[in-house]
Image 1 (spheres, one colour):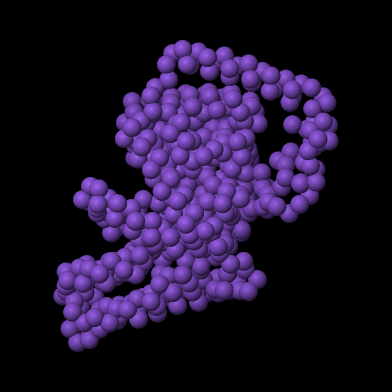
Image 2: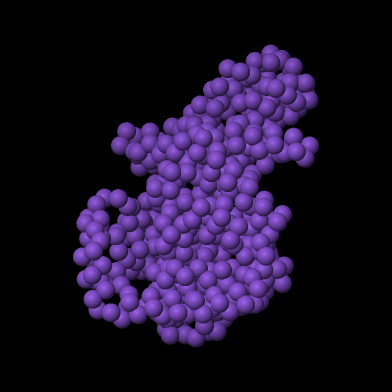
Length: 511
């Protein structure tokens, strides 16, 4: 790996090291309490990253950066798996094996079939590392024939070894380093961490408006929502491309298209989802689907609307209901939908009290809608570390969600310093994972009660009063911003190199 590249953060290495230990301990508890075992291919935990993918308000995250981050992640994953395989080469010296394993190893003449398979994977990982190293340096090279592209190429030989060891009466060896490696493949894979792409909805609208203006098809921005949906669905069903080859778009539009192309060129499972911030209408989702289609990307990639202002949270049910009534969309999503709930922007828009109640009501409405439509809903919580960004003790925060909100699992962000606090040490990593697990189990087995009508009435009053007072102070009083800057170190903190994005989305000051 080039020396000027930053190493994998220690907390990421901790997660990779202790996920198998967590699964091992969880399995022991399940075996003791319920007499059941986790399957070898269990996939209870997945890790995804914003790094290199979140370009919302951050001009430094470009398509080139996303491509580089994907390469660096695969390079690091190959390096880490090479270390795992090297241990297996040393350990798996047994000769007794099933006919299936012997055939995979090269025939009955192989004295140490497990080691032979491990050595083959070691050779492929070394070739993969060399190829990725060349790509990172910008060299134009073709992938070698033994390049590891798909997780199954790593999983299947090792899983065959595992099955053979179990069949031959060697479960202690099978359930040691080999099982840990198999579970790392399931959790992390050859991409190490998947990436979420995030972009603001107006960037997609502007890109399509520029394209349609070039094609003389109309003023997309001024179309009604119904007109936009009609056009987008017609193009999504069309077999011809929309973008002409000789078109020279603006730099901003080219960046949007280049990002879509990076997604299309990425290996399977490298990109987890495309998140649309400030999503307001169904056409925001369909527009991204069309841009991805034009780049040759699979339409199965989850496109996730992020509802983050007070009005958007209140309208989330209506937007999703309209989307789910579109036959084309229902067929593409295969009855699975992810929706992201914004915490920090809604708190900045309406204050913590009003935002928290709007988040609760939006989740509740989305749960009922998806139950009615028989769609599996996954709620993606955009929480941060501080209270203003939705932060709270994880167990209590999860149990405070509406009943049924965790049926589709949990997807949540861990931001900034909270990553180090929760995953920086081995014992803390294990504790954090068990806190999430216990809360999800409890929320599904012993769901919280439905709020009583009188509780809701009180919350509505508190929400309205708090929102009005918050907006009056923050938006209507001209002395608020000068006071805030005089009473806090906001301006000084803005000058420190603490974050990866600009300190403000709006550089003209104000709220």
